[in-house]
Structures are given as C-alpha cells and as structure tokens.
Length: 344
Image 1 (cartoon, rainbow, N blue to C red):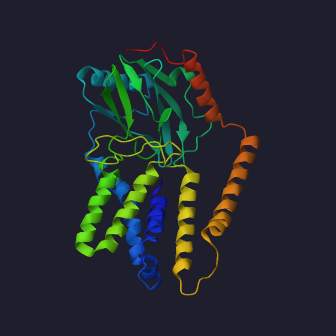
Image 2 (image 1 turned 90 degrees about the vertical axis):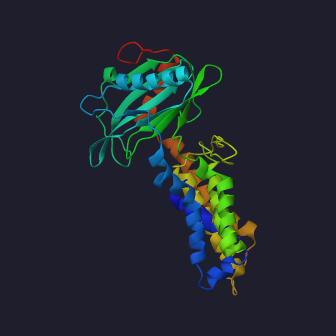
Image 3 (image 1 turned 180 degrees about the vertical axis):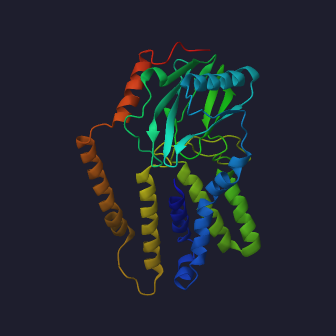
C-alpha cells in the first residue's frame, strides 16, 4: 500500500489502545501522529536506507539513441546463466529511460517459465502519470528481444515487469534446487524492515524507555503495516532474523492498486471516527459498530462495485492491454515476434 494508507492504518490501530483516544480528545493528538509515523516506518527504512546498500552485479542502462531489446535480453540471460553456473545470486539493476521532463520510454520484461526464455518488449513513450503517447511504439521488428537460458525459471510475481518512470527496479536471480533460478523482484524491499520481530524489538525498546502505552503505540502500527503488506504479492520477511527470505503474500491486490489504497484510508478514517465518538463525553451519534460500518462502508463499496460492473460492460479493452494479450497468446503458441532467433 501507499504511504498515506499505511499512515492511516497505523493511526486507526492506535485508537484501540486504552487511553489513546481519550488523550487525543484532550489535546494529545501528537500520540496518534507518532503511531502513524511508525505505521509507515517499514517502507521508510527501505526506501530511505536499505535501497542504497543494495548489491548490483549488472546494470542495464539502455541508450535512448540505440534502443536494442535483444541486447537487454542477452544481458539478463547472461546474469541468469551466471547465477545457475556459480550457485550464487546475481543482482541486476534496471534504469529507466527519461527522454524529457515528462516523457519516459517504457520497456517490459517477461520471464517465460515454460520455455526458459527472457523476453524484452519496448513499449510506447509514456508520461509521468504512465499514460502512453499514441504513435510512439517502435516498429514490431525493433520491439522484441528474446534470449534462451540454460536452466528452468521460477517467477511468481507479475507476468510482466514494467520499467517506465522514476527509478527502475532491481531483480535478483537466485539459484534453487532442481536446476532452476528464481526471479526475485526488488530483493532489498520487505526484508528485515518488514518483520514482526523488528516491530517487537522496537516495542520493547519503547517499553523500557517510556512504558507500556508507548510500546503499544510503536509496535501495533508497525505490525499493522507488515500485516497489510501480506495481502499483496510480495509479502515480507516476517520473522527476521529467524527467517531468511520473504514469505509470499496472499496476492489480493498490488501495493499501488487505487481501490485498495482508497479503502485502506477510508476504513481507517471510519475506525478513527467511530472510536473518537465512542469515548467522547457527548457522542455525536448513537450507532453500534455493525450499523455504522454497514452504512458508511457498505454504501461506498456498492457504488464502486456498480461502477466497475458498468465500466467492464461498456468500456472496451485498452490498446495496450490488447497488445499485451496478443503478445502472450503469440508466445504461448510459439510465435516468432523477435528480431531474429533467440540466443543462449
């Protein structure tokens, strides 16, 4: 989830701590702001600290004047083969292609696990809001690069990895038993920083320094962040240092999904309002939790569901989605889309 959603969830969780809402209503709202800060702390640790210590064995920095998808695919295949042969992880950093202040050349990676191939597709130029610009796609003979690898591939994240705006991702290729290499998206993210144990250590430190109240204000929002991320795809290294790798999430939605973030913030707001009203000397409304959340959560949920149903029925599939679908179908059939034969 986005930072605002994690902040809101952290505050909402803190409103259940005995005395927290009473203190907030008596002028100590700073307590809840601290809880919100610990609600976003795991991502802060990653994006402001851990990412700068990430290993980079290969760096892919495409030349906008000589954009060659086959060269990119060959480099990725080389990294995978190196991981397979040496038995050691190999990290590849992918840079984005900024053409102008609001123009980025998009490219996509696909790890074909059935055919043990790496596929690179050069897409259209996009804006910073990721909107494609019509007519900027390269010709088909220059759009696709394919490279065969010498081992099996394990890839459990998205079908495509898109590299378009801001900073590009790092991907780890990690050897696995059975003559396979696993593709791990952003390996430095959601490791030690996204563990229940780190939240426990921070809570214990707060308890020693300030008492049980602040221990809960620190640990519970932190744990809420870790738990919320487990609903997505990437999961987290939940019991570091006792566990060494991320546990996969439930794959219910992506971290950037607008609806997931909207409802995360909306539900958090409802929880905060309900708990504030519950402890207020003179409550503004008199509703049980089932009625309150049934009305204020049920109505928006129904409206969103109706909107999505109508949109699905009336709005045709976008050109980019259609191209992606055709690409997958052609590869599934063994179609030759690249500029030449695959290379090992």
